[in-house]
Length: 259
Image 1 (cartoon, rainbow, N blue to C red):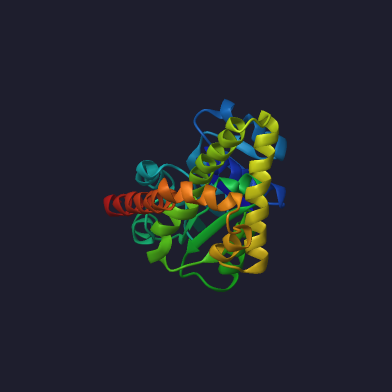
Image 2: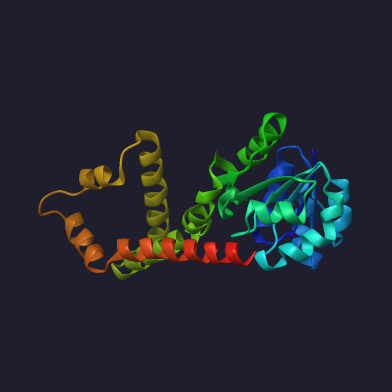
């Protein structure tokens, strides 16, 4: 399909690349094209003209900041009749988008930056059916794993998986620094931390086990792991992570009310 990505920032650029790599014709827009010239290596066409991109496309991804959604929809709204409009803007609800683009077929979605390596978790909400729904699934499958959800869950998805890579990198950086403090060479500490995270996630995905079960496999009475877990509990790491998800969810809900 002909796909326009309006707003080739970090997520928008990743979307444009992923869709082009699976065979779609893609045009991406951004005011400063110098920052996204690399997309041309993936056969993505670039332009500053949002309206022309939307007019050319059969499906449009809206990947701008929430505060820019109204202005962009005012700019391209008349070009969206009968077309798929997939909004990636955090906290902007389906109802608002439909009011601004009443002739479009609207989807609200939240991927994450792991699109860059085809491992995003993308949740989406829509009432579309049939061929349109299959097209949407095809788009999101190019990003990684995807799941359709009720819109009421989208703010929590934003707080958990949309923002989640930031939380994970904080945790990973701390693990790496822990390795450095214990005397490991820098690259060894980095590789050990990354592979441990990757391996644990894969183990949980493939076995379907609860994280607590896998933790119990590692902990032995009087062993090394229980001392480490004790320090994590004393530092209230789990509480901090839960509060991070909750805070990001609340911010998404605030953005929804402003829209």
